[in-house]
Image (cartoon, rainbow, N blue to C red; front, side):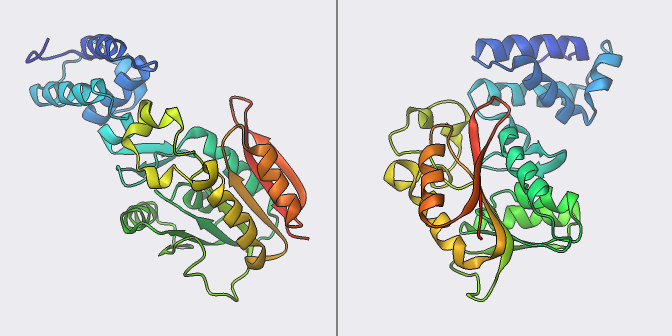
Length: 284
């Protein structure tokens, strides 16, 4: 069907077939997202008007995007966008693609931090997903989001401006390096690198297209987690919370580090697949 003009129904069928052949386990969703992007419509429109033809330009654009997806490029990179916490975020290959399970981190923060005007720090913000999700729910919080990668800071700031969250500041900092020593926060939150260098998943799926600096940590994936747990203590208000995303098998050791450093009310929250994903602790 290359070079032909599709109807919506034909485009959906053709896209599913191509994505299945390419090994996608979300072929129908992939196709819908690509077609919605090309046509500038929502999912309801696709199924309300199945016989509506794409323009010649839309058919060519759709085919080009399908070919990129068939080569393994993540959908988020193909269309340059990923939804997180119902927020449309621009993405590129300078940062991690926001994952649905990271919304667990947002849920825990919203549930535990009670201050109406909380001071919040997000470390390694990437696209800005966590900070902006929190900002969308807590307009009176004062949120700082930092990343050491200049390209990530530019991207997060673009997302912040587009969404209009003026109570979020995006800054360049290598973890706490640019945070003034006297700063104190009611919440510090992070989804840091936590994958070991030799993890086989780095050569599979979307991870092949994402920056390893945002994925891989020394000491078998624990180095950045341990550093943040240790350093965050000095930047937390009494009763302030530290919340960290980590690998599903890492929770026992992460909780152990929290305990060794004197945090209280330590617990681990599970993700949507019922796997350990976020560990939280409070400075007494």
